[in-house]
Length: 173
Image 1 (cartoon, rainbow, N blue to C red):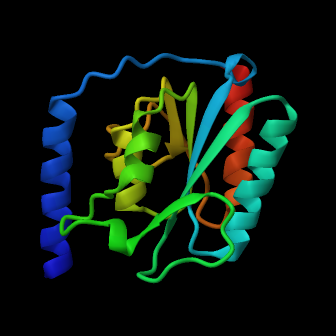
Image 2: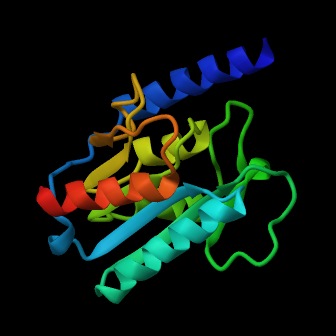
């Protein structure tokens, strides 16, 4: 019951924030992008590896790439070489707080890639309020406030496959 109340409050607060923000969005091709942000769930080591390899490939293409992970624990992470936030950085209605999150949301990325398969209210919150020109993420019903472009994957597909599809679509735009 408490989680249901938190989810409702989360959505109410987010909708209020979105009413006061008008961020100009635009379609941009991957080849034209210079500054790319990647939001992801840093709780699973396998997914961290997939995302960091994806980011490294973008860097090899001369793309400035910034990562922000959500570590779904209350304790500090060990050995992360990217910015992250954890449960201690969530307020009572599950909105992320802190300087790292604020700076990431306010940065005008050319493209923001949401690299996670399961629903994540804290990551969706960051995406929804991001100043990025284009926000791409996994298809999730009723999440148009968080993404400008959604990619659908089957239930058994992996994060690597989602990132592959996202890259293909960003190259076709």
